[in-house]
Length: 343
Ligand code: SF4
Image (cartoon, rainbow, N blue to C red):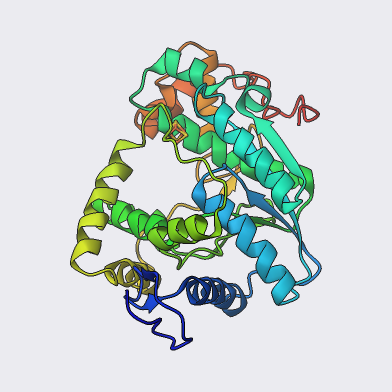
């Protein structure tokens, strides 16, 4: 390859997928880290003196996130403390292995680690859920439970922020997905770099503008240890279509990823459009757009032998639940306010 475009005197070893620049390793690290630093400072993601839980799966994104945050914290004196928060969904052959990588991250980056399991929180592992519902809607259960589990973990750790490894490709995919679904409510908030879980602990996305390919390159050249096997229950089919579409568009022009994100950021929801209002779930108190949150509905279905309950139309679900005793236990999730000590 030719000389590094930054004219540092070294040979270029890569071409940046995001900009097309030919860079040497050191200049690439510098560019990548500076861009994440810019994202953090521009959006004022963290207040000095805060504690941040990094949602850690052992995959490339969360591994790079933990590593880069540690570097930037030292280099730019953010004055932050970090912890790792992992969720064990109970997926044999996938999460059990990836958690070993998280433990390696814990030791390498000297960050305390907390692991919460679906079994302890909800009374069910994903293996058990899949044996009940099959492989069609498993990601719906998993996604809803994980989101809530991370929020509960962040509360338990009493951190000030929860940082997730969502990258630019993830955000662009989500914008596309919400357009394809016509989901205005999600479309209007899916590009937000800071979101409030409703429990007062903000979720932040420091890698929001980092391309997936560059995250892989960064991890590769830094020789970071991460887990790259796909979940045995296969990725969410709908997101898969959006991902394929995005990858095809990226081949035509890599800047399309940023363009989609910027389009999502610029969208303004018409004030006359009906948006769901947020409230607290009457059962578990978690923030919800319905009287009963999605996690409680899914659990109700699992615990009452009607696992498809939360998958159907919301009006049907509401009717079904209203016809039952409203005091059904959440299955040990601490969601019925009877057992908050579980976590
Ligand atoms: Fe969970 Fe689906 Fe992701 Fe597997 S692919 S970890 S089941 S959301």
